Amino acid sequence: MANWFNNFKEKAFGDDIPIKQKFFNIVCIGAPCFSFLATIANIISGVTVGANSSHLGLWACIICTVTCLALYPLSKLIKNMDIIIGIVAFGMNFLIMPLLYVALGGIKSSMSLYFVVAIVFSVLMLNDTVKGSLLVFFAFLWDGALLWAEAANWHGFADLISSFFVYHGNEYLDTFLDLIVCALCIAVLVKILAKNFEAQQIRSDRLLAQMEELSVKDPLTGAYNRRFLIRYLESSITSCRSDGRDIAIVMFDIDKFKRINDDYGHLVGDEVIKAVADILKKSCRDYDIVSRYGGEEFILVLPGATEETAIVRANQIREKFSAMKISPEIDRPVTISGGVAELTVSMKATEDFIKAADDNLYVAKETGRNKIVGTTYNKGLEEVQA
Image (cartoon, rainbow, N blue to C red; front, side, top):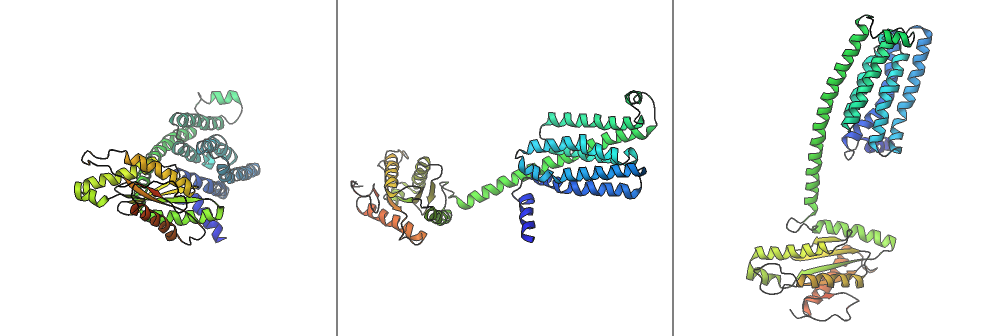
């Protein structure tokens, strides 16, 4: 039972739930309780008149409570929040509150105060200003019609019309005017507070997203950092083995990078590193991962790729990079080498997977650089002397 409650609380009011959705869920859960309590309060206070009125009020309570209980499952069935909020706002203003008002004794029950709740809900939750304003305007007309109809003693249409021109005492008129003023004041105040709170939440969410991104991204290149890569590979290896899917990685390294730093300086060296990251990211599919593994080393993760496919992709990247003009200060070609590895049964851990690519990268560097080397598919690879 405790687990069910905790799961429900997380789904309805968790930190990831938007503030508007949270407020709506509160309404869904609180409405049946308040509907029932409001009726009990009126019955206890003795304001309902006669047995028939009490019986009618009880049935009104049951109808409203059952209707309110259906709000939360209905909100899950209808995925569009604007639609479900519009339905609830219309129902509160034109059906539920008027029904309770009529059933529980009219103006003597003080149920007219609850019209304010419906108005505030509509102003707060409806995003469309025009539709929201029209709904509130017609809700005021509808509430006023109920009050004037009661003032005319419910004798019919003629009496209802005459009630607009004949003075019946200030009880109904005062209630209606107070209803408008009170509802508008509270609604505007709550709307302003909600807007400011929502804006603050958006800023906080944006800042949190930036912080999360910084925790997994390399600040110089914008590629994923080594910590994220290890976590991603651990998860990917497990899922690929479970599903029987292929996955390959390519470890790239900038050829003779130390000489670039020594000859042109570290700022130019940083430009070269960023150039490698840029071309890797531009050459990626949406689900590929580019990570800066070390100083000038990058790892490209290719889910669904075999070693042969990865070598083809890596060679395309290598050729594009060698043709690039990175900086006007560099007067000689800058190249990269790569080691490719495909996940095999013999690789027991993530470190084994990375080591296989690193070993092949070492072979590429030792046999001429500016080349891509794999474990199995090395045929036809020409050695290019740096």
